[in-house]
Length: 64
Image 1 (cartoon, rainbow, N blue to C red):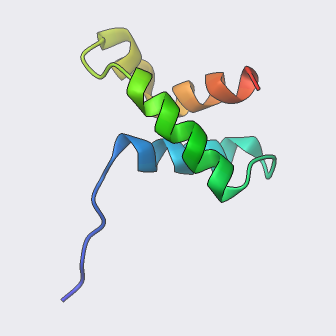
Image 2 (image 1 turned 180 degrees about the horizontal axis):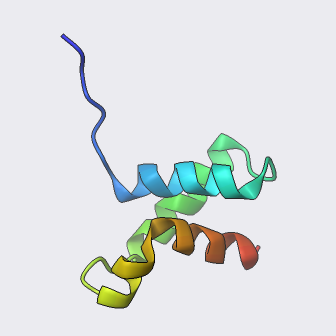
């Protein structure tokens, strides 16, 4: 039986941060940033939901 990974905002943000940082972030750094950033993600905000997590991750990286 194949176990499926649970989808979380933190997990998706971590992957996006790693992808868009082009090696500037380690896995641990990305996880820590995603943990903090996920608390600020408002999925009920239509503008943010429309832009998506990749956009949010790019904004976080731009502010580093």
